[in-house]
Image (tube, rainbow, N blue to C red; front, side, top):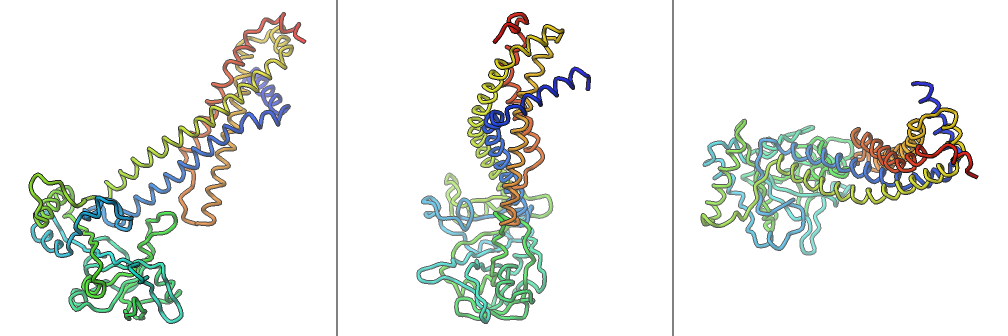
Length: 416
């Protein structure tokens, strides 16, 4: 650092420190804008990673078939209400006719609320009313790559005879049996006793701190069909032979169209998706949200820029004699320009640093209440926030700095 640069930096710091209240008001808009951008970016990146992990847990080689659009647990739209559910029997036909199909898992979603019924699970004095219930084929956990902490999946025989057995998610097992193993113990579900044969490991993919798979009570598909005849929402997990997922998608679409007797010119009345497609869709939504956030933050940054420009114009006016004296004793005009640009950049940089720090603190606070809440600022968001803030400051300070650098030394020295 040259002596001139060091002196310019010292003067800039002195000027900012001499008017702390005015400087603080000038950077308030920058702080708000950077907090907004960084915090929203942090949440979106965290959620994107969680969604990616959640669906990749269900199998990157799988094609998901469902009669509705969107999440199976989301409310029905008017268009979806007119679609017929898929049949669990389609699994055998797809596996038999699909040349690229390895196997097909079946998930039958049991409504936990219906009429006056609210499903809950109870073991002794312990009860959980936040459960989800599904009937699954014996191969379902293998198809989705689900990890067991202890126990096993269902056998084909248990499925055929509608055995009262169950596999519990991590949260349900802990709610009903505490830290003890759940395997070999029994619980009541909808007034019927079930025996636990497997306990799942906590799932990695989370969404706002929770994976619904951890709240799942899984029973054999045959048991669910017998015990819950109103359950009709079926999701098929079609696992492809290695490297043949695209072929499986084409084959599955053709087979389901045939099974549902759709005319050649009729659109599909079902949805096929893969983990990559779902993640890409979330990315598109995330980009739209982020663009809206940028537009809102730009308003705040514009207010901050106006505040910085106002402060710099006032500073130039108040220091007219100082500028004239520096020019008279040999200071170059570019040194004056650099000094005021540096002051503006430092003002905005302080605002950017405060904004990043505030966003990080808010994210840490949220994570303290919800440990898995995805709000840790990514490095690119921190760097972008600081860079944008300094850029805004330099832009806002250019006109005041140019005015200072273009002063006539004689006229400046006469200024009162």
